[in-house]
Length: 358
View 1 (spheres, rainbow, N blue to C red):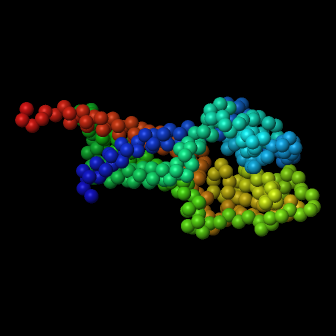
View 2: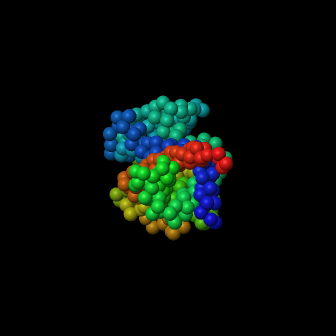
């Protein structure tokens, strides 16, 4: 494909999808530190996780009629948990600290207040709030964005020295200077952008990818509870944590009629860096460990699927990775602005040229 055709293809793909890409970039930047910002405005401080305090609060809420489906760490300050529950037909998210004290009780119908803005932005970023259709559209959009980044590199690489000279010259015409800056800024952000975008594309089709790789999350074969009394939640938490010394509690799924066991998600030493660990422990109602998955020793196919989220969010690189992730979102917004300015400047330049024969 010749250079003019590559540049034309790059231009029209950009113009067709830039609004979607801008919204995705802006929402991604906004939620990159969502939990930290939310905890800051809540005024929450890090607390130690007290299994007894958590178990006491969960028992009180269940006795009051709350149907708790799962409990997850907030992802911000240590010892902050979100309980996802149904209360008389109303889906709610309740914040609890590590001692079991309730911090916030919010209906999921709320879109912006009480910290709900971050959840709304997250759902928009994941699927445009369109469900399956949104996931499919973002798969296409992400693939086009990745291909467009590659097209930009292909189009600019043969002229990189000339484009660099345009960017640094005070005498270059505005379209030339903008094309130089568009290339220079684009070149330095292209690699992290490709990693983040392609990981995001894979996440939109995570179930399909897992099936293709043969990844299955095992669950205990027990489907019916015994007649004996179940161990309390705090004892089950301590049993799970004892399996991986030094691990921290990430999530809890409580027993149900069809799942007569506790499921715990842990962030264990040695596993891939991420806020939400991938180590899992299933504890039976009798206190026995039924099944466990050590994410530090995942099979190669499992490591691929487990790496998608930390790659897309930058968590695989710790704080530096998360900052790079946010910076890449800003990079994409800057590239969109530069691209629009370049397109507009070239249109004005062509319009200013006198017609032949004048």
